[in-house]
Image (cartoon, rainbow, N blue to C red; front, side, top):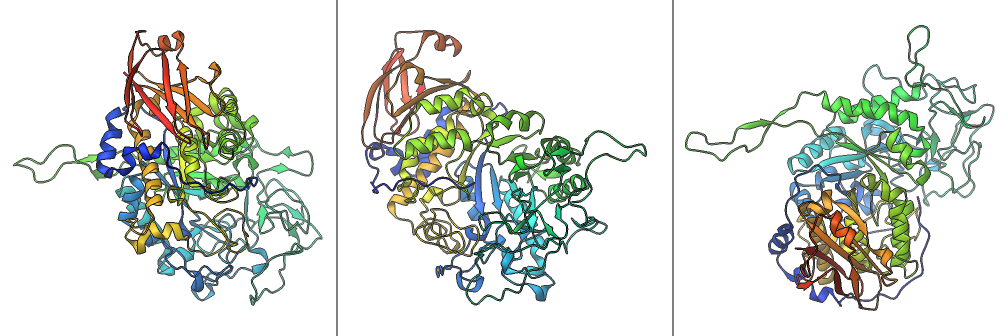
Amino acid sequence: MPSSTSPTFSRRTFTTGLAALGLLHQPVAQAMSILLDVGTPVAPSDKLIVYQLFTRLFGNQQTTNKPWGSLAENGVGKFNDITDKALQEIKKLGVSHVWYTGVIEHATMTGYSSLGIATDNPQVVKGRAGSPYAIKDYYDVDPDLAVDVRNRMAEFEALVKRSHANGLKVLIDFVPNHLARQYSSDAKPEGVQDLGETDDATKAFDPQNNFYYLPDEAFKVPAGTLVPEGTIAPDYDENPAKATGNDVFKAQPDINDWYETIKLNYGVDYQHDRKTYFEPAATDASGRADRPNTWTKMRDILLFWAGKGVDGFRCDMAEMVPVEFWGWVIPQIKASRTSLTPPATAVASSKPTAKTTAPKAAVVAPAPIVFIAEIYNPDQYANYIETGKFDYLYDKVGLYDAVRALMEGKGSPIAISRVCQGESGTMGRHMLRFLENHDEQRIASRFFANDPWMAVPAMTLSATLHTGPMMVYFGQEVGVNPKQAEGFQGDDGRTTIFDYWGVPEFQAWTNGGAFDGRKLTADQKKLRQFYLQLGQLVTGSDAIQTGAFYDLQQYGKPERLFSYLRYSAKQKLLIVCNFDRKETIRTQLQIPADVWKAMKVVQKKTYTYRDIFQTKTTFAAGTTVPVTVPPLGVLVLSIG
């Protein structure tokens, strides 16, 4: 979902406060030991840290970067580029789950016909590489991502195993609402019927059709469709036309529609008051299930990938699919994992002794499968958690919008309080917080904050506000800043998802596959160190992982400051974020008596306050706490 553009700010080096970060200039091991001093959480937590890795771009080392360039010209990353070393470095950011974006085979302008893969018509493909959300074969992986295309699934399976071996869970996209216009599976398991294979295309709507049709009308490519110069683009034939993915029931969609996709039919008649034709638990007189054909086919696709060892799914535009489908399918997919016989995995249960040269193998139960919904309607949040059975939801229309306004020099911390009082606060443990993903503009771009350091207070807040998960987009940690049109997507402050490209700042970190960051600038290294410290703070803090939240903003603090408490039985934290880009804020924060009682702390005249995150300063104060926070600075004060 595209974000609105923002004013351009002049770039400013962030020095005040961060110059005092002693931690930024210390060796990683020493910094980590300081952060881990806050204690190790033991209670179950929803505080996942997700790293979104755009697979096509991650390992690409080519630097040609020709707009609309071919694979041969601009290069492409491979599954095999994501090595043990790469995964170990990602893990250091505190990451628990890697979301491999763009894994499943999608429509592309790159031909693989010699290998038995059907060629897509460029008129219904966006970009040379194609959109990863125009799925072409749900039982296959993108051939671009394989070194040996014939062996592509084995290379993906090896990546899953490699990720697990490095202590990381694997997420992939599930795109349930729409598919590529020329969808046809050549890799589906024996006995599986293709989507649309049994449809009656003479009917505009039928509950057992997989697609919606416009009988007696042929599809027309939108006016202004972009095709690279010199590309052969024959006439595209689709008769009758199918409805377009973003609920457009016209034979000729607009150029701004999702014209490269077709809408899937879950038994909702959109053209007749959205009347539904399903009853998940019901059966007809013969005992057959009374639910649309699409439901079963999409369930089987999820089971297929769960069987590959995938640990979870980020579900694209989940609210465009009936919530009843999710409530029916998610428990089945989760049950498929828990019903598996746990593999015997070698885990050190004790140190080797004179009589044993290796640790005993322990049986490790499979991890539960996680479901994340891309959702933008707060009125539906509770429904998709309670009825739909999702684990986590995007916190875009809520926290992201509120903190982005502050980062752009507008808005107020009061908006964050409103977010906490609303859906994304009352359901805080279910909300996935982020500042970047493939749909949003890069923080460093001129369309957003124009400086990656602007994210320090916003990212700290996003990571520590509640017990819910957080996410980092690949390259965010080194300040990726798209500065030109990269192809279909144009110049919009986003890293392209449609074309082949090299990401210069990220290539400096990957350093030809060494993944050591030696080609990063000093400023980029400091920025990555901040993200490493933040991840380690989150994973090492019991209060952040499992604790309660208390908003101190109601006590009339300065307009650019947001302060709050996170506390558990083991740890009490006062967190203060300064969103002002120029001014140091000096003020006093009042912690009310009822809050001390809620934290089960006996009120005393003085307590010890220690910044466990950045400055490492320690001071004594009572229930009124004097704080000095530099521009774009944060304090994470342990109360002891």
